[in-house]
Image (cartoon, rainbow, N blue to C red; front, side, top):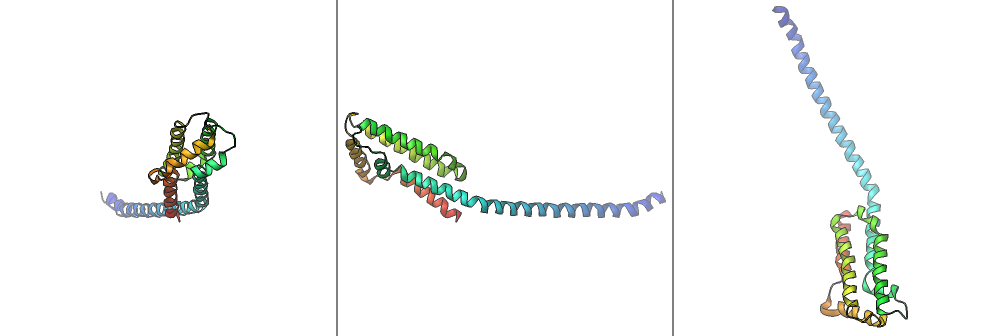
Length: 174
């Protein structure tokens, strides 16, 4: 019995020291791992920031390109019928959108939703206005109606709403 007590006198403190050491080493390693993960995250954020800003720039350009004034002047060809012009507008919007699809990975889901909504609203507006013009009318008639639509009640362009969202997000990044 005395030999068991003698063994316990040495082993119990040794076990306590071992457990304490293991706990301290584990805590140190966890802290070190968190510190390295944080540093890596900072490095990745610094590397990703230019890409994110570039995505916001490209989407801003997209929204500007599909705004009525810009898309009309870019798409208009003399001698087009209202129907041809309408189809060219829709095709141009979709082409621009498809060209910028990859940018969604760099921006928030809310901002991407606003960009997509702006595109859809512009298509809807152009479709609605095209429905009020005879298909064989000239492109001048549909252009006139598009501008009248936006001048009614000083409607805000869908692209402007989306641009405001993008600008707010960029300000949070900087």
